[in-house]
Length: 162
Image 1 (spheres, one colour):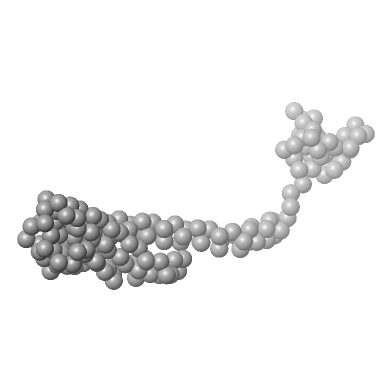
Image 2 (image 1 turned 120 degrees about the horizontal axis):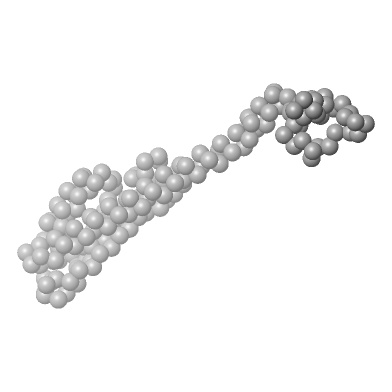
């Protein structure tokens, strides 16, 4: 046991044991350490390089998740508008009211809706109604839409009047 401790000390102080130089592979647990101030400097440099990349990844993930959530909410608004539009007594006012109700409930901003054909009273049974909703992403983003400033999200639903 004493001989092992003496060998570790000899390697740490670079003394020769039995007339031979210390082998770096003989005792891999013992090695010269860098001074603490140099290690802190390396850590600060790594942080300075990696922190902007990590922040960009986190905010980009938030933006993309917000975009997916907004797209799904627009799909619900379009679907509900189409559901109201396919009823026999529906008017454009009914569809617009349903859209406004869902937009307020879901917290969406600047949503526009287009119904084709615009005159729902002239539709016969078996004809198609198409409702398209769209909203600019920058108005619905949580953190300002800085990654996708000019993107407009659009969702369209077609239903057949019974």
